[in-house]
Length: 295
Image (tube, rainbow, N blue to C red; front, side):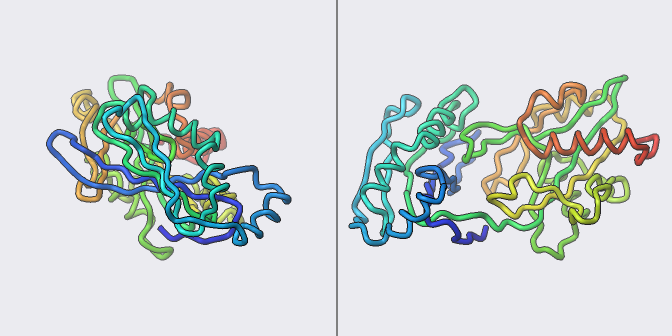
């Protein structure tokens, strides 16, 4: 993941986490999440330019005790160049406090004891992400008169909880095989092997001026996603086998479970933008007659 320094008025909280145990599997991971210490209005930017004149200390630390892990404190550490005032602002940031609440909720990343929060590092300046292109696949399976959507469920550190999402992944570079990547990600995350010829590129229906991609957060990230559709028919046994299946590249720290839900309920049960964008494109393409009857 490449970081571009753009806005000096923002602090970055780098959250290190360790997966203690998941059915005998142990691994270490590091992920990052970012919270502004204050609104990014004009006056804030001006003050930020003067930040380097303040006294700084690489020794600033703070300890947090979370009810979800009373046996281990979370250490908050200031990176070199962070002033004491900005360090305190970050600790008192309402977004950071809300994130701490999120990770301790019923479906938060600390909820089942498999993960623990060790350390938070506060650093300057603010950044945006240059992630590049990605793909995601809306998989619809017809079985016994019902249409099901196949999702993945995994902990997402930036929001601090489990998320239901479309199978998705990043392209290796901007010249990558988009359709091939979509097939590979589906197989890695769900165990389903799809034929590329059976995929429908939903973002191809967009106006060419869009680049035939969707951008979930263009203000903070350049990630453009190609959304694909697969629709097929399976026996009910396949639906049962998929439900709760554990997948993912464990050596890369992926701890994924497959979830299968009725398509009619899909738009209400997840906050994943990829899901909601795929539903919108799929339904609008059907409305305008852009899909074949089997789709």
